[in-house]
Image (cartoon, rainbow, N blue to C red; front, side, top):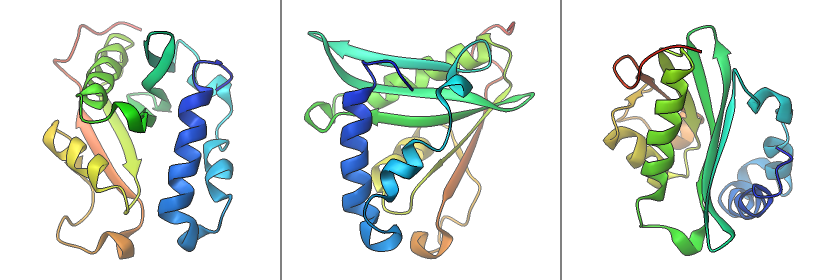
Length: 158
């Protein structure tokens, strides 16, 4: 994602990923993960990027790319640490869902890591279905996958 508004969010995300997962994947693995997908995958019409700014600063955002013909994959849903607990992640999710539905997607797929209980809670409380055993040890499960049906979110039409 080459948009300069995204850089502050991704930079902080890399630091947080390294602090949460550095002992599991090695220092610097966050940068590799954040650069796994080319920016072109998040461009329209199959993808989208959303950034919330406040006083010219990027405070939250997220993106999606095409996962398959009917499914958008949400990536990098993030709120800057100084702006958490304000409902911004819920706003980002709702806006991405609405946009994905308007683009013709019927469902969402996303993953989060085992050391991100805040994200897990957010997805479970906003209608996402866990694709893993909720009683299992997240560290043993690894990547925590979620899905959500978008039918009814917005009128279709890519």
